[in-house]
Amino acid sequence: MLDKFKNKAVAVISSRHVAGPDLKDALLIRDWAETRDVGTVISPWIGSLDSPRQVLQLYSDAISAVQPNHLGSHVAIKLSALGYDYGLFEELLGIARSKKVKLQIDSLEHESAAKTHALIEKASATYRNIGCTLPSRWLRSASDAERAAELRIHARVVKGQWHDPTSPKIDPRANFLTIVSKLAKRGADVSIGTHDYPLADKALEILAESDARFELAQFFSLPLNGFDLSRKYKCPYLIYIAYRSPYMPYNWHFFLSRPSMMAWLIRDFTIPRPRPWNSHGREPFGYVPLNIAKDVHIKS
Image (cartoon, rainbow, N blue to C red; front, side, top):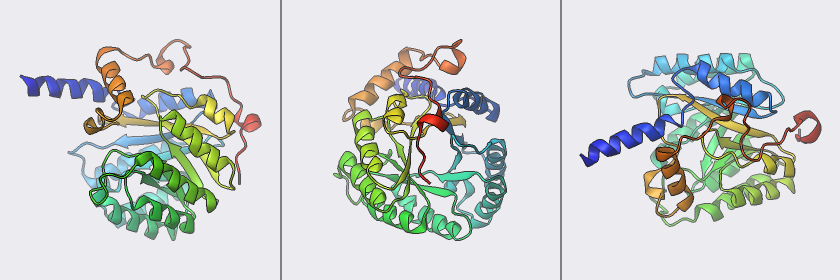
């Protein structure tokens, strides 16, 4: 009975963190965001039955649907879904190159990091408009940040869901700022990916005092609390839009140590959260019209 309830709870909660089963569901939110000068990161979340070749088609469709513009429009992928097949990845890079779309490579568990970064580095030799994801729960992310700066590729800094088995007691907030500081000193291209408001504020402050190019990106279904930060630091604000296979963007193991996540879990299971793109003009908390071209300084 307990397992049945848990499975139902997971299904209900996870379904609220995808735009819907199809690309058109993500594009509905993308179109809403663009009318509010908000950029997007679109990501097809892959099911366990999808073959690498099917995944390539899903990723290709997402890339083809993106219209690069001054707001920022990226497609996020997972190399594991391609079976770490560089031939398939290379095909995808060719499509992204022809469309001038940035490919953001998401992180998975710590054990996959070496393989993922090796393929990213190989790809960067022919296409620089790609990005790696650096979880601050991992000790290796500080050195990965240095390498990303050397390769001149985009770096997205997140706390991440999985612990580093080699350094289980690492402080993710302190390491987050260490990683950001390294990227700032190198004048890198950086995305801050967190809903931890004080942490995002401090990270953006560090970047604003450097020559780095930076943005703030938050997951679309979690509280969008970054509007005023994007105005404060005059940086682009993006939302990460997942669609297709339901999944929870947070880890069960963090609930006891992160009260805000426990609150999100309770809200997800008990209170349907209004989605502004389906709410007859209702805007998310903190939203104020922002003219990117006029009010946001994008360093080149």
